[in-house]
Amino acid sequence: MYGGVAGEERRLSPLCRFMPLMSKKRQPFIIDNDLGPAIKEYLPADSRTTVECGMRPNTPDYPFLLDLCQREEAMFVTADTEFPAHVKRYQREHNDCCWGLLLLPSEELKQIDVLKRLRDGKIKLKHPKDDDFKFDYARHENLFINLRADPPEVRELCACKWDEED
Image (cartoon, rainbow, N blue to C red; front, side):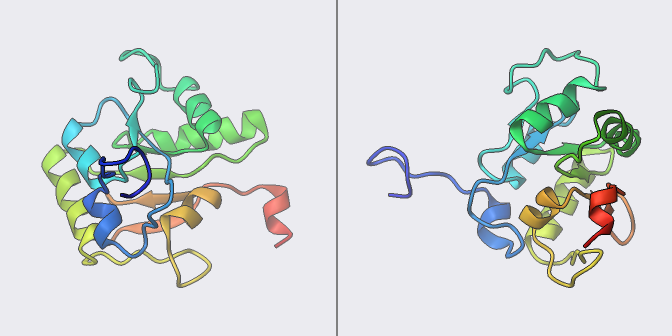
């Protein structure tokens, strides 16, 4: 048994099982409701859509989705190219860092393909400051993982004053 109720096995997503950069511990991801349900299989098992988190399907993106991610301390997964700007504006207005952003390609088949290649180790992500990249670091360090870029890139979403002291 892996946690939970006796006789019930916890399902680990393929991304968690095979990808060394994804740890098996809780990795909160909130998935944009505009994305297809098939990508959920390639994210950690506890990933939830915005609707599963209690939001209505047509809730305006800004600021409500980012408020939700802040409450849940979750990285937001979307294909909306406006979201990096939303995150930066939110951080300025709230004087607070968010929990990272994962930007996927616009088409569902490409989303699944890039997540499969990431899971299989065919895509290597590089931390902007270190060589060692893990999604938990990305979440805690508020990183922007752009899987639309070719090659995929990782950069900081925050230019906070307290971040410059490190």
